[in-house]
Image (tube, rainbow, N blue to C red; front, side, top):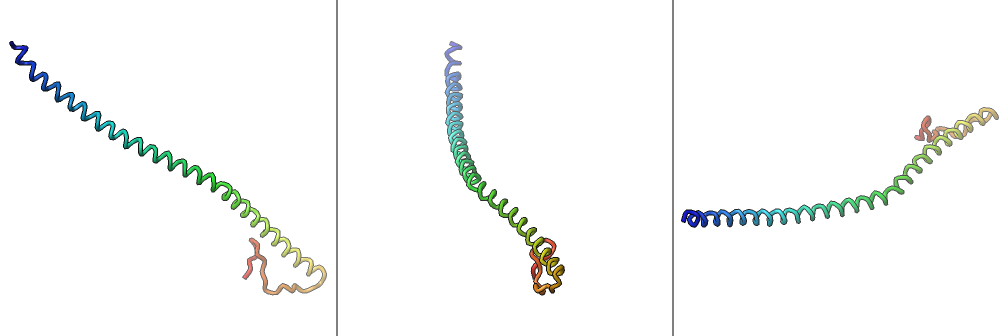
Length: 110
């Protein structure tokens, strides 16, 4: 008799626990889907960033080469400017360049 009276409350408690467990599983799967979508979006963004960086690399390398060339040209122009002045002085001619300044580090054009 006592077992029979206690059985319905146990059954009700069992139903409640199953319901809570089922709700938790549904919520877990919904949140897991959201996380998977976010992970996929992140993977796509990382792939796009990788492609962009891959495309930019030759451009950056070219920029470095151009800057090195520019520095070398400025140094050469300075040397030529100085050597021209020395040559004109050596041959006894006046410097015909007037107020023009060299473009290098030591001299700048006005």
